[in-house]
Structures are given as structure tokens and as C-alpha cells.
Length: 290
Image (cartoon, rainbow, N blue to C red; front, side, top):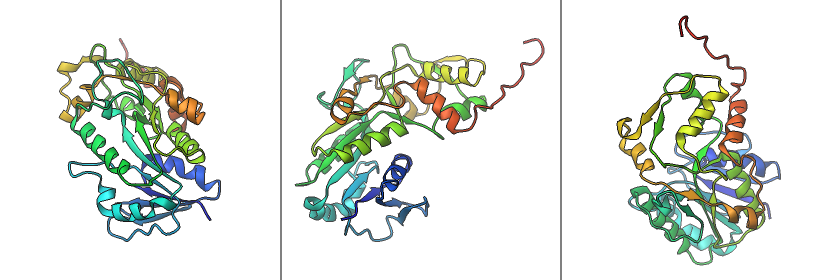
């Protein structure tokens, strides 16, 4: 039987994974709220059109939950439950927000979930919804902050809009989208239903350090530091800073054998810079007297 992946929410991560599977002869189906296109991928506008699970062997869900629960299961839950015994692999993209605030200490997959944000509570509930489906070969991936081409800091730096917001002791874990894609592929090739994996790199780091390194790569002046309490951030942005933890990825390496392409933000930002074709960027000349 032909391997067929249905991507519920054909977004940034699915677009990185799809070429890896298409190159191996897979059939890939993706859903999008608006008309979308990617060579080789069968796109369905959804919600709005019917989705058939006939012939689907693998499912990847990346649509985030809300207060009402997981929207995919609200519409397709019965069909997924019926197809569960025939599916080979199901991946659910969750978030490390399920661990809540840990005051900068380390967490791994064995750490008890303890969300402290609304989005974290929603994710814990959604994970439980997927886990409750009998016979579903479910794999949960808890993602750190995602970056990659089109999601790097360079455009904001070049526009002069970047700020190095400093909250003492604050760190974030992050992961390049290509490392997410290779981790998903490794799991698809070696299914372990029930497994949970943290997807992050090896170097939780202060956000101001990451932005500063990006400025150095562009040979731009270092953006001024702005204290967190004076930054005037949106409630959503402030909520991210309310959680401080370091996330371990040992299981990703030991069980799936993944060797990160970008083990720290330094390698990752260099790759983003090259992919965005800005390596030839010429920094503006300093004005006279500076």
C-alpha cells in the first residue's frame, strides 16, 4: 500500500517535512483554510471540503487548540477513531508550554506537565484528547520556539525595528524547522506509539544573545538593550516571558538517533541567513561623525 500522509494544517513545519517524503515516493495531502499550493502536495481547503481518510496511512496534526479543545478532533474525531487500527503513525505537534514556568530549571519528557499559561492548559487538554483515542499510534512532539527561513530576526534588524529585551535570567529553548522535519521523519521510520519527544536544540539561551548574534552576522550595530518592564510588550508577548525553562532533548537523540543539523542558534541563524539570500547584505555606512 502506498504511504500517504495527511497533514491537518499544512503550515510551516509540514512544508519542511513534505519534500523529504515526496522524495521517497510518498503521497502527501495537506489542508489549509485558504487556497494554497505546493508542488507535489494535494491541497484541500478545510474546513469547507470533505476529508476522506481512505488510503491514509499517516496523519500529522499541527492545528492549535482553543478553549473548546482540539478543532481537528471536533470535526474529524469519529473518522480518526474509526481509522485508528489501520493507521501506521500519527503525530501531534504540541508545545513545551505544557511544562509551564520552571524558573530556569531543566525539564524532560518525564517531567510532570504543569501549565501556567492559557495556551499551555489548552495544549495539555488537546494532548489528552488525542491520547484518549483507542488504538491510535500516537506520537506527541513538544516543540520549542520554531525559527527558520522567513522566521528569523534578520528582516526586523535590517528595518531597524529590533530590540534586545532583557529580563535577567530569562532563557528560551528553540529549534530550526529543518530539525523538526528530520525528527518527524525519524519517528515515521521507527514508530513508537505512545512516545513523547521534546524537539529543541542543545542551547537554551537568552533572547538578547540570539538577536545580538544575528546583528553580528549582518555586521549591524548591536541593538540597544531594553529592560523587560520598560518594553511595552503586548500581553501575548509578555506571556512568553512569564515562562522560563531549559528543555532537554536526550530522547530525541537516543531513541530516534537524530543528530541535530543546528545544535545551537549560531549554526541555525547562519543557515537562515544563507537561505534568505542575505549573505551579500551590505551594512549601511555609518554617518559622518559617528
